Length: 388
Image (cartoon, rainbow, N blue to C red; front, side, top):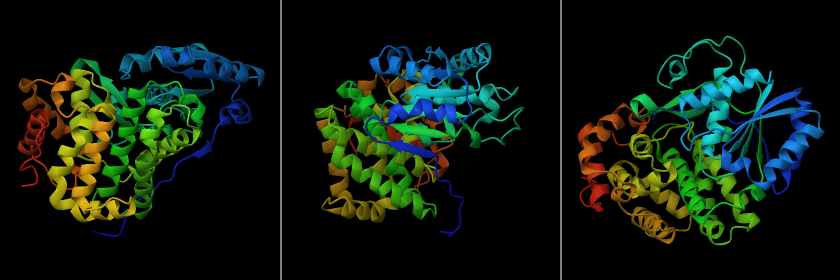
């Protein structure tokens, strides 16, 4: 491995219960007098949302709300949000919600700053020049999963092609993030579980990716430990502030760490989510042990090191057993059949996974036949022979 790399550490973060009260003053201090809030209808109906709006208005910030974000944001959502931004003559964006709201808000910032189609900013392409700087973005996650609040990338669905595309621009990095555990108290237990497994997948794939980034490795390792020690508590004790805060931290850490790379968990998950509309965190959770088993020849030593740091006995086998036990405790299904994936779709899903930008970074090089083998194993519910 060449000891060489480009490293980025994310934006300023206000972490802790009650920190959302500081957001209006920080938006105003940034010189933003007119802001567009981008969110979804569910978040917009929660009690804390009205408090955020009234606090911004009291701080002298004129607010418009765009709340038409789909669970997987679509290009049409971004276009509508950009139109709302322009109609309000906004000067900044406040993205509030789970990964969908955050990704849409960041993508709106990109859309109002360029005449290029969104797809020109796909992560695999050269980055086009902007017509104007992306406006300041403030991010407030209400789930502990994607970590989009600290990322330069977004995921937007191309509905016509049933594909999830990753868009990238450095200026989409939010200027300020608020991690307030009180905003996550009302989440249903299954959403807490699924998003928490998404955070684990990010930290896990970043940790075992075969690139030189010791900063990301350290962050990812601690992120996995936080998931181990807090996810079940957050699910079972929804108002446990410490568990909720630590899961928000783990989510942001995962997205910080995956600047290093992701892998086949994500490249397989993206086409499944686009075609079958399965929750991204849930899909990652179902796929996780099968991809771990496939990657074993290339990651066994790293996973053994992670197991030691996380106080898990028996190296790789112990770590895999912990993942399986955690999934069971969270009522995560064991097979793709539970996500409505059909055997007839597997070949095309494998083809689409090969086109995903995360596939080349998987530590064990994979061809289409390998992707198909993983999918077939995840349909059948067996990890036998995946390491061969």
